[in-house]
Length: 79
Length: 464
Image 1 (cartoon, rainbow over the protein chains, first blue to last red):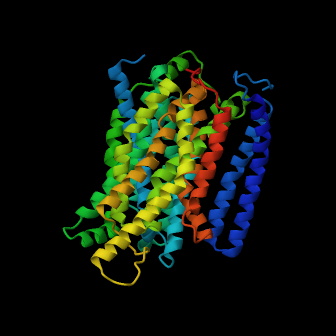
Image 2 (cartoon, chains in turn cyan, green):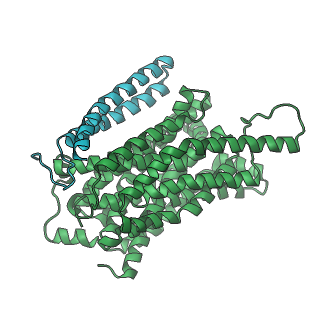
Image 3 (cartoon, rainbow over the protein chains, first blue to last red):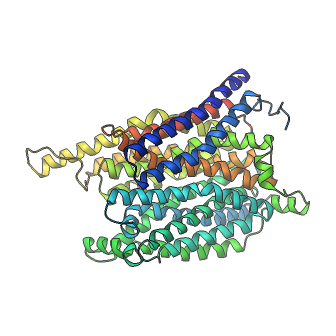
């Protein structure tokens, strides 16, 4: 289980940027189809809001990869 | 620990205020269509509705900021005064929305004022929940936290219930003639649910003023153990930040989408996709909420015995596997009922269009829809009932308010609050599949289930 937690950490680290890239790509396409102010605001809000969340997912993945979620609750890394 | 009578008073005072905050917050969403016509240009109804939904989302997006602002105050000054402040801000903003003149009277100032008031509402809500949950949990004995905090968990749903009830009643009592009553409601009666809020808030403030500070926080403060910088301690120290991220990605993110799919997207789906009558779609939700609400307490109490993790994750998994069949069934039942009614009442060879502006279904279909929405809300009770106790137990008292509020409001406000909006947007992007909007909550809940199942270690209750 400990190994699984670490390997999945890599997945989360990749998933963060992948999700942001996909979201940005869809946003550009959608705004291109209908460049109205409403559409730009909607997609702009989505991208701005989800950027810190994507970064958070990368940090979460890094913590997982470095064993910060070990079952005994100890954190082997330095603070 | 508190005597049973005292803890009941604590739960009552906290829950009432939180319920009123949710009521204030949801009447705006429930009246989105009416508000759109009042405050946004009417040239394009879709644009007007999207604008108001964006305003709705803005209300949710500022919630995490409210969590930071008021969480910090709550960890520095205390829980009691912080959630009193949030209640006053929420009540004042809601009352003020009821007084803003329409777009026809003051032009662009109207939507701007409404947007600002809506942002204040979101800010206040961001500070309220964490305070109430923390306050109750810090009065409760460790082995009963799930049960005691589950009463706070009922308030979000009951707030929605009360808002729907007040709206329905107001809509039908303004004139003896139902059509005239609805016309009056759309013209000015919609303001009444907003104005009523000030009375409710007044009562709640009076009750909360008589409460004492949380015993754990009071003790910590007396000993000089409170945090001097809760934000820094919560989000820059790895030992705590890792738990904030786990709370978000392993619990609140999935809980948020399940909550909003069950209680908001379901209503939107019935009304916009199934084209169900306004009153029927709302009363279906009201019945389902009424039947399902006790299960918040059932699952909260159960989590004291069997742990929080698997109850929450089971709710997410059930949502992932059954959302599409359940929503499909809702749509199929509505279509069938309409065709049956048409065959009985109107013997016409022409096919019945389901996109009739206001479809009413017969009693068996109505109760079937109540049953389906009940199942959706039952999932909500599974994911939401134990989560306050789960979050409270993840973090130490000195930074608890700040640390638990942020993941809760990102999970609910951003992931959850945007569910109806993103789902509707997906539907417009890929027309032809009415269920396409469900992929958003299904995907988020599935991801959250995997993270929660793999990374959450129970028992978590070691930070009392």
